[in-house]
Amino acid sequence: MKELIRVLEETSRSAVIQVMDEGADYKTAEYELYVDGKPCLHSAKTVETLYGLTPDTAYELQIKRDGVLSESVSVRTRRETVTLNVRDFGAHGDGVTDDTAFLQAAILVCPKNSRVYIPRGVYRFTNLFLKSDMTLELGEGAVLSAIPDGDRLPVLPGRVESSDGASEFMPGTWEGKPVDAYAGLITGLWVENVTICGRGTLDGNADFTNWWNHAYRDRRPARPKAIFLNRCKNVTVTGITVKNSPAWNLHPYFSEGIRFLDLRIQSPADSHNTDGIDPESCRDVEIAGVWFSVGDDCIAIKSGTYSEGRTYGVPCTDIRVHHCLMERGHGGVTVGSEIAAGVDRISVSDCRFIETDRGLRVKTRRGRGKDSCLRGIVFDRVRMEGVRTAFVINAFYFCGPDGKTEYVASKEALPVDDRTPRVGEVEIRNVICTGCHVAGIYFYGLPESKIEKVVMENVRISFAEDPEPGVAAMMTGCEPDAGKGIFIRNAKRVELRNVEMSGYRGEPVDLDGVDEFDWDRA
Image (cartoon, rainbow, N blue to C red; front, side):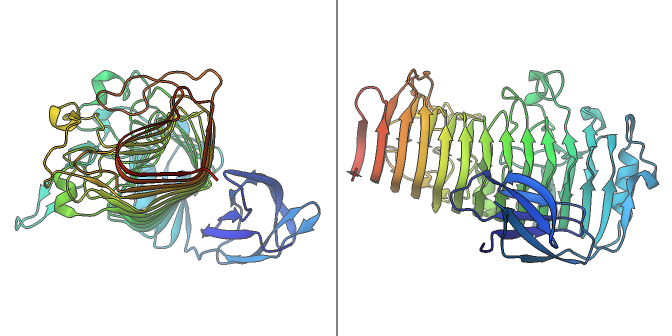
């Protein structure tokens, strides 16, 4: 059997592997993973983590199916200077004691290229700050259990002017703007070469009696994220479960070289702003083998709201999402809406969406600005089941303080100026969507800045027998509907190659303001 394993990441004591099966998404055919000729674990996950390894040691990995072993792949674990057990620093792990000081002490004294280990137990804490060149491992049965009390959390200021007035220090942020915000439950500021890993859980303990109720949802300082990485490099998060975050779960911000691998991210469907992973103004981000079930977008790619995007001009680029499972959430993968510096080279492949409100979701609006150019978005080899609307491009997104103004909502062509965003080329290939409810394709571009090009190839969309009505896009004037086929407004060119729909209601196509529309059903 040919080589079937790709090593995505290794730590001093674990390795993340991907089973290279064509056609697999989050799950694949069951297999045994062998280490040095001996069976180690049984799994059906395409992206899996192998634990219990020894630092600075070479291993040979193989996959066994139907009694046949694959070719071996070599992996060598990282060197490790020392392991620091938080129990040795006084941490109790009894679910009652506030262990913050003990946990933070272990992190602060951790030598370069060493590991802070949190063994089984429930560790109550407020928040932790990371340092560079370290591993933080949550052992099996370990729970970092957040104390949901804003009065005990440090605040990260939104803007701090430098002494010479020439630059700004911006540790705090909320929805694309530098504002005062509570520190993340785990926070990294200007750190690099960090790994957060293990089989344990980070529990934000948010609910509707604290962070999610109306008194806290829109307050300042802004709610904390579960993991916040501000201007970090080479940070990997693997294996752990993150649940009940006060706001966004994982938020890398102006960072690069970030990996989120083999994670479980979970919040109730009705929780507020509990996005799964939100890369903002980041470069080189990989999201692989992640299971999502959240109360907002599973993945939302961003680059600032207004002046921040234009001032710093850092787009989100080279974002790779693959072999993930999205069960529920507002959007499977979303681009926007805080997207003032634009995006480029966004790849989503080999994923599965189950009962998300939308599949691929692009959202922007007037005011995001001329640098808000959304391009290079590729969506390939994706299965959707029971989604409400499969594909949405919405240039009139109305959430936020100014979202329902006449300037944003007007369907008339307005003058093109520095406030006008662009939607460039979007490619959608090899998608099967079954049990769709509201709409198959809903694209609404600006009349003065039309969607430039959408290419869809080898796409199958079928509707539920009794589709539930809903709103396809969050925009003024979008009325509830069900079983709508293809609805497009204001696009320069749309190419549909081998695209089929079944079970829709009414006419299959509703176009207006589309310069070129080519539907080749062969």
